[in-house]
Amino acid sequence: LLIGISCKEEAPKEMGTTIGSLYISDSIPSAGKSLDIKYTPKGNTEDLKAHYYYVANGKFYPVDINLTKETESYNATINIPDSASAIAFNFKNGDVNDSNDKKGYVFALTDANKEKLAGSVAAAEMYKLQYGANYGIETDKVISIAKIKKDLMKNVDAQKYWDRTFPRSLKQVDKESSKEYINSRIASYTTKKSLTEDEYRTLGNLYQFNGQGNVLDSLQNVIAEKYPKGQFAQQAVWSKFYEEKDASKQKEILKQFETNFGKDSRIRNMMLTRL
Image (cartoon, rainbow, N blue to C red; front, side, top):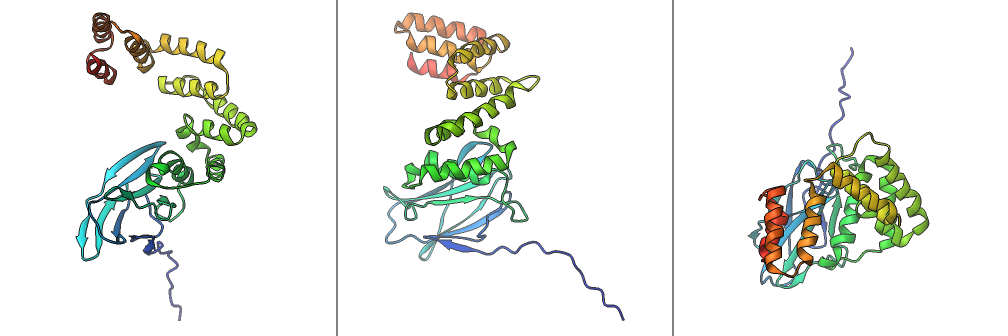
């Protein structure tokens, strides 16, 4: 008698965990999933506010958390975006941030199989470096940079998301290895058949990090020629407007800006606020 036994693998079960004053329903949070949180503050709460940041493709997005009070805790359910690679919770009682003993509540996210997402460690560490101090989080910069570099070297496709920030940080702690890293990033752009304006601007940043000001100057001319109505061209007009002290001449610059670039522009709005 043969008895059939199913060998189908079951998905990992979610198990909650408590870190500091925060409970999360899944100890290994995943992108694209919902997450129940329970925050139990120490002492009295005067004006408790909460929000989280999620990191996606090298950018940081803040989202308010609507907390519901239940006895001694405050509860909420959040939906982590599919695009997120890291998430960080922030709680503020009155004027005091809960830093979780200066470690923060920062998580590198995983996929549905609980495997860390490519670049998720880098995203979590970049959050600590760029935003941590605002919330009382302390991190060893050398250690964080090493973690970021290790993750990005393992996940090359994630490197492009940090090309405008990470090379500078790497250079500050390891000047020698930063040269090799920056040169490899420059090569990833210069070997492409064509570049978008944003990629040209990123390449310019990399040349600047590398101390190649002469190349940067010629690259800026290329950007202006290829994208005469792009962001670079608009910012050049903004610089001219900002440096001009005569209000009547500023109005002339604004009028010319509207003629060349239209009225639907953040830079145009900035000009209007200064008139």
